[in-house]
Image (tube, rainbow, N blue to C red; front, top):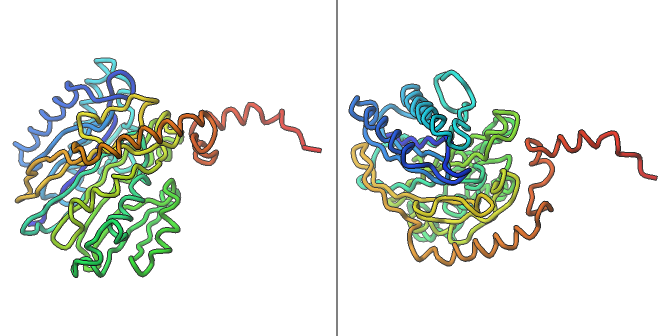
Length: 364
């Protein structure tokens, strides 16, 4: 039996601005997913939030891109959005960009990360959920997990990791995919991943084909043609037994790196690792947050979760995040605090340029 874990998220409405998902919406989703479990559609589930995003974590045996699973998630989001509108929650239904379901929620607004696999004797898994940032935020940490021996000692020490991994990278602008192998094509890989607004890790495999990680690649602005909120990606990373250890998977987040997003999706800020209780963005609608939940997968059941960033070991990372946030905020509307012009094309900047177009004159 092959097990599939699907993590599907959407911003369906939030409390007090882009802050957090209220309990009434989470409870609605839990009730709906419990019906799906009793009907045999899904084997297990866990519902949570990261900031203003409703997160559905589901295990089942229907495989990746299952129309039944995706439609079930879509209807859950629609029902939650309807409830959010009744309560006049902020940005109710924001990520539901298309009216009718078309067989797959990809391209409709919600973010999706899925892995289908044969369960190992013991199968630990980490589900990452981010708020106020874009899918490329995972480029640096996942590169470090699966290709950097200064982070993952197993790449040197463990014979089952020593051969390296394959990275499936998506060009979100051209909607194309390329697969690069590490360590052989490390420099080519880094040449792409260093442009996280365009080139995004979608899947990672061990050289023998074992699926190791998956990342959502939805870019809301490319779907809507305007800024409608940041993408707020999710990722699934399998661990241990021939894959990086859980501690190696978490290690990159001890150094908060700069990501695009934050206020109005138009600024750069440090990514703060937090427990679920602190996954609520306030200061300048941020700083961007990331949550890590650890599960054991057992006969398609989700055992857990463990709230992995709810640990004093990450206190210094959080303190450093606040220092970096202070520094970046002092830039105000100037780059690099604000994103560059090519990344601002879905905001009000083009409107300003259009208004001033006829006032520009040729320089002498």
